[in-house]
Amino acid sequence: MCYESLLLTNLRDSWQEAVFFFILFSVIWGPSHGAGAVTHSLQYFYTATSGISTFPEFVTVGVVDGQHFCYYDSNIKKMIPKLDWIHENEVPEYWKSQTQISIAIMHIYKIGINIIKERFNQTDGVHIIQRMYGCTWDEETGEVKGYDQYSYDGEDFIAFDPKTESWVAAKQQAVITKQSWENDKILTASKKNYLSHQCSGWLKKYVNYGRNSLMRTVSPSVSLLQKSSSSPISCHATGFYPNRAELLWKKDGEEIHEGVEKGQILPNNDGTFQMSVDLQLPSGEEMQRYECVFQLSGVKDQITKLEKTKIRTNKESLMMVIVGVVVTAVILVVLAVSAFILYKKKNEFPSVSLLQKSSSSPISCHATGFYPNRAELLWRKDGEEIHEGVEKGQILPNNDGTFQMSVDLQLPSEEEMQGYECVFQLSGVKDQITKLEKTKIRTNEGIIDYSY
Image 1: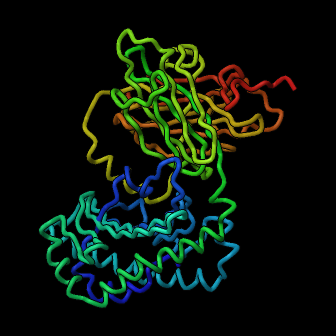
Image 2: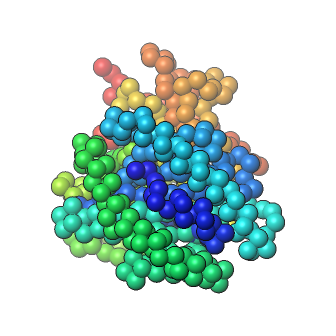
Image 3: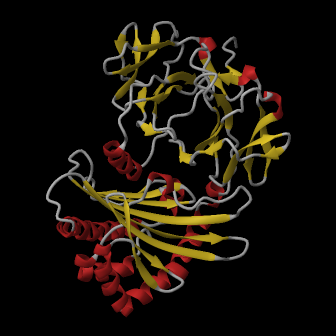
């Protein structure tokens, strides 16, 4: 089911003792697995907000193996399937029942966020409480691991330890919750049963439903990007599936860790994933000794040799793109909170690139490396902003504290490229304009040949 329904009654009775664990962006997509692991995951995220008028007060997201399969929020007041395979295998009555459960939990969270604010002597401002729970299942060994975590305003608060069947309070305010929940033997028993048995049962069912989709493999487009000659070289892989992948740097055939910084695996808007790994090349070091390696279980390693001709920088006319990320409502909440805690720094200008999967696909204009995040990215035709055929992505953070975003353009059939331009706008800074030209568009295979 899309909820741990057995907890609903207990939550109603003991909500005033509840505190929640806020999910940080780095773990929002749950446990990561090596390229060789055959491990499946089922996760649910509850998010309640206060003081954010432009965002739903309550959101639920269900995720299987990184695929967002069900969604509910307080605006639509309806649990909806997000993938064809779950929609085809669950009857309408299932979604009706999940909607009713969602509404009940939503009311509990609305009351609870006020109680938690009182516990912290807070009266106004932006506050977020969130729960993440679920399980992983190793298809080879049969091992199941469950977890249930809560946070408040970005800090750990309380989490369940399945081994000891006890709650771990990360804050003094959570101690009373720990005591209350541990004294409730029925709650503890149902919690243990769900995390060790029921959760994996649902996970196996969902994997069976969506096996063709969940077990497929898609290789990525791998590119190299560098802001300047002294900046780290970023190896970026995008468009791969599943998310059980590795991206690493090797020197003379051996994996290296010194001077290497790995990024998180992030979702793309088409159900695939992206990730990057940065290399700070030592001064005077020979490039030809290095290579970036993408590893995916069951697929031959994808090796990209480090060569000067493959590296794209801000100063070049051809830019290799990092595909923009469009994420679920849960991540949007995290980004909203992140905006309040990012440190102040000077304006930074982005690398702007163009990418197209095929000649019939939308053209993606991607800007990465800018700061602050108060920016706009848009398409113009003959100097006028256009909206038809345009799809904007969200502004998302990079590992270095800067941001990235993308905007897609579906070029009308037989339409001339001349007259189109992608425009990056940042307050107090001159517009950065990238003309739409054939020679600037990159694909997985390179520059598109439009001659046919």
